[in-house]
Length: 308
Image (cartoon, rainbow, N blue to C red):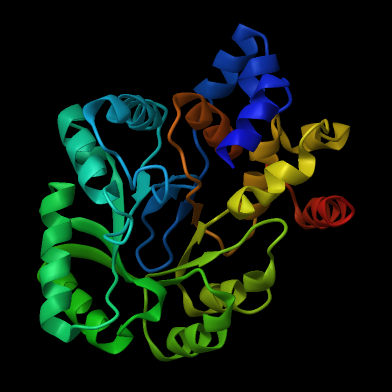
């Protein structure tokens, strides 16, 4: 995805700031970010956050942290809040914790992470979660979710105990595997949860058939991972210009096109695309400004992508 998106940017077709006049770019950035309320609490959160899989998970030295630090600094300065991570993402939690601590911006962020265990039960889950607190350098995690339905019953109980103790604010579950959707749906129906997280993109809409509407019915916030379809969407539009009608919902780039489709869904609370470059922050947060597509426009966007 990095290479494809970089090529699009070089072609002048992706980042809105690259073809806007400076005054237009600054004016767009001055608009407040659109927020949505978390159903279980009413707390408002911006509809675009940062995902840290891949781009933060294999950081080997301080030099590699420099663009990540600037990415997080700019994200927070422009009003971003949500940063999503996992102990299964290699160095991601530790890198995020170090950079956020160094920038002194923890209190303005919403940090989400996961418990991800194939075996080990309660005690191993507790050890992993405590390690996440240390790596993130925080005494409170905003959202802690059971990752990919691993040991769900046991780990949900631990997370709820931590929530009762005031160390975790929200409880959730995640999946990025469509073969888990049936089991995921059953957990959603059985459990009272603050959030669910699932993969969803303009070319991968399966979760929109049942899971995302069910979350709306059950009063759960929805966080979306893989919103660019692991780079498939950028590959599909490489060399193509945005359709003129994208301006009808204030869309200035392909990244915004893909993200605005997602966050305009009435049951979706937030999308967390990977961001490891400051210019991507400006571009992606543009999807959280201006108008969003309505139901008819969303259908048109689906038809456009399906025709490629």
